[in-house]
Image (cartoon, rainbow, N blue to C red; front, side, top):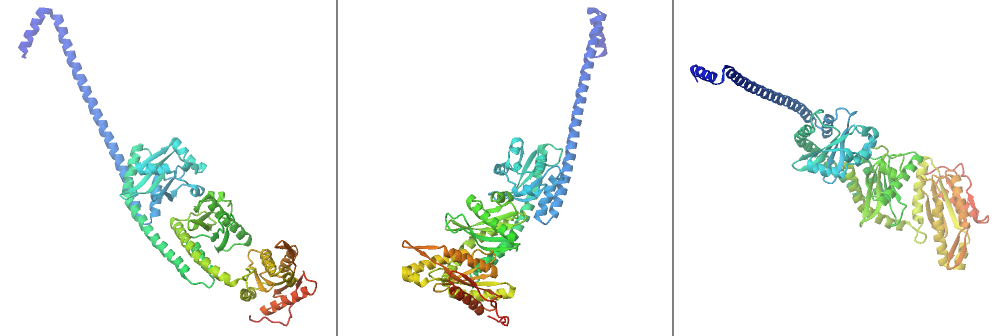
Amino acid sequence: MTISDFIYRFAVLGEMFGLAATLSLICAFQYGIYLYYKYRREDREEGLLAELKKLEGELTSAQRERQLMKVENGLLAELFAQTDPMRTVEVLLKKFIPHTSTGFGAFFTYDGRGVDLYAQRGLSRPTLDQLVFDQGWIDRVLQDRICRITDAELYNSQFVRCLSIDERRRISELHLLGVTDQHGTFGVIAVTQLFPRNAELHRQQEAAERMLDQVTGLLRHRMNAVDQQQLLKLTQEKLALRTIADRYYDVPTRLLDDFVKRLTSLVEADRGALILFSGGNERHPRAICRQGTGLQVGVEGLWRDHELRIARWSRESGLTGSLNPKQLKEAGVTSLLGRALAVPLYQNDKLIGILCLTRKDQGVFSRMQVSLALWAGEFLAEALLRVVDRVSVERKASLDGLTELANRRTFDQRIVKELETARRNGNECSLLLLDLDHFKSINDRYGHQAGDEVLRQFARLLEGESQKVRSTDCPLVARYGGEEMAILLPGVGMQGASRIAESIRFATSRMVVLHQKQRILISVSIGLACFPRQAMTVDSLIEAADDALYQAKHEGRNTVRVAASTNPRETAVSV
């Protein structure tokens, strides 16, 4: 439209409506145009501001991502600088938990069956001794890889119930991170917080997943290398134990002693005990072998009692393997021991015993140590059969057929060894010679079968009475000949031997042997001699005890007589 056309139209409108109306209409038109351009400009400005904020957000996010990548790269550099897998895991946990005053974390290995604690940060020793990882959590990690445990699920868990009061104050949520590669999950990280500290949860989880993708291969490689080294060491230790089992021993039980001694050392236990159950319903196990650190007499007695408690509890509860302090307490062990390893021994699917390996500290037995002990238990159960068979054969050869006491040949061998030991160590050794009074008249009156029964029951009485000595002494009860018996008491002086002899005499006088509804009363005469007080050699000791027995016989029987002191001119000679 040209200016002339506009002026023409303005003139026409002015002529039709009047000049004032025309001017109002023009002003309204101009104001509308003004508002249009104003709102258009404001929309453009708001769009520019929104675009600017978006760019600022993207810049901030980029800076945050850049900072996070810088942190991750620094962590990866530190992790790759480590050569030890344990140290690698510790660095990783420290990244999540820089200050143990505000949280804690742990790394668990996973073998497809369950988890084992590998490393931790910020947890106390009592907690570690009883820490339990809830089975349901493992399933969630296997499915989701990264999950967060909070609220009732967290506070009602077995995991939290194992924590101390201070540790419960430091946990409001628990993050579980699966350490997974193409072969599957082989570890779980449990931490109370993720990083970066102030980032949203999804960003923290993304950062954790990204980091795990970077370090999983490194961890798998290093842990596999350690596993290979441990497997090689385990194989070498098994071969060392097999070598012991393949040796020939003059005394078969020494095989068990050497085997248990070496195993105790390999698993870094303080003491080891092989404990057997003698019957299907037997509640009282018996230790046939004990090895390890020497202890004071009172402490050793308590330690031995604890070993038997562990064996009974393991059998009754069905729980074996590594036992923590809480389980030891359930077994009735509240002192001395901090950790135990109970290894079952089976023959034909029947529990025959427990191999008990114990520590005074609370150090956890490693997976390799547990694996070695379990293998040793299986191997020992087989070796035990061979040892028992050989011991049984040799035992029969060394025992009297009627009384099942040691025979004369065994007595002659043992007394030589015991006197040599006593002379070398400066100890005492006593000998009792016992003879049943009027035994010939028992045979004549009641018959030889009755006489045999008297000898058998008298032998059981002697075994029971001879055990009333210190646990460190090893008495020998033997059939010396006919109705004459001998009791060798190593480490027992004249006073202790006199007390035992009098106890035997008194018990025998009160003994009643029932045979074919007949009551047979017996008594015994006893001669006592002691090395080195009454004799210095084997022959002179036996002679002194025999002289004392002869004196008891001729002074009324049913009595105890002590040999006269040795001739001061007698000198010690080799036996």
